[in-house]
Length: 449
Image (cartoon, rainbow, N blue to C red; front, side, top):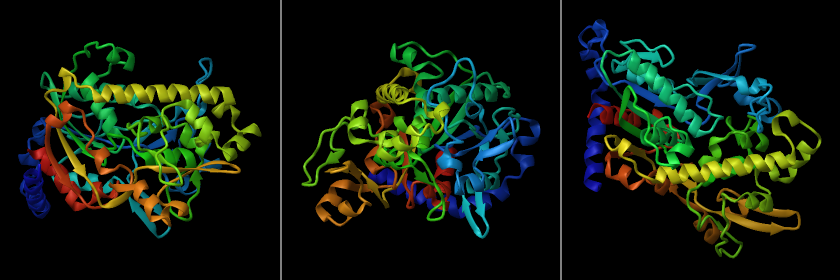
């Protein structure tokens, strides 16, 4: 494996140095694009949670992905939250939001944050042509999977499979090869699709054979993948999330609680996740609903409970009993997702896997559970009581990309690990390694093999 990483490093340097020369040497007229036949296997990029723009089709308003919703989410993001309990007789307006494209760049006055625009520019510079999966054209070979990332990964895998069928239908070949580039939580979507196709979780668990498809997944490139889950996800569920540092408002705990795939991104390990003030392990089942009630996690904390007791957004967050029922359902799905992804199937045997790895950032590995007069506190390595105690901090932190530990990034099933064809260590944070020249060069190298 070390020899492979050294070889990859040499290849990455060459790819970054030569990419512009290579792109200029392959004009569109010589690439096969003018004949209507793509010169390369289509690339489909699958963003992680929050990576797709969401729009309200009734008003045309961007509810996620624009600068203002990121800076000042309304009511802590209540207007973004997916209702916990679907109403079969009436669709809630917020359940009708549609994904309209990847989040490219965020601009606020003089502040700008690049999101997926560098990826698009890099591959367009290499001769790829950007298209849309909902209406693919035969001469397009770079696509983004635009999806409602608030919904669970099973639903997203089914939606991706259907769009790949549309892509295959636009090609003259009998069965179209596709390469998937999967960022963060999207790794679970892509891995599930490769193993089980568009089967429901129940059918997949029963061992049913996936239906035949018009596409064949050739490669899956995992970037910042929390294959073994992330304890940071518990912090996001427990505290909410701020997307723009310092000046940005948070999405509330209630809002993050409504984002289904976050539960499937919780750590797969059942041990070593919590410790007490003496540094002694506390065995807590993170996927047991009673643990959430006992420790006041997420929507069951004091502040969210007080807000919801006032009757705020009851059409979205329902009653206390219904919130518990929703939690039970999400944790059950998370257990099933973990079990299915740990298995190997003959349907994924021909897929080659690649990883972009990162170990340059401190990453949450365990948390302190501390009992106070007001109840339990869950504290992470960045919190003062842990940060100021070297012994506790050593228990709480591990190397990784800031979201997923290195061990989590490498946590594949036995068959997937055997099919690992390449890996590259890229410096930078959980997202940043995707848009760095070294990361982009690594992806291009893997795709061109």
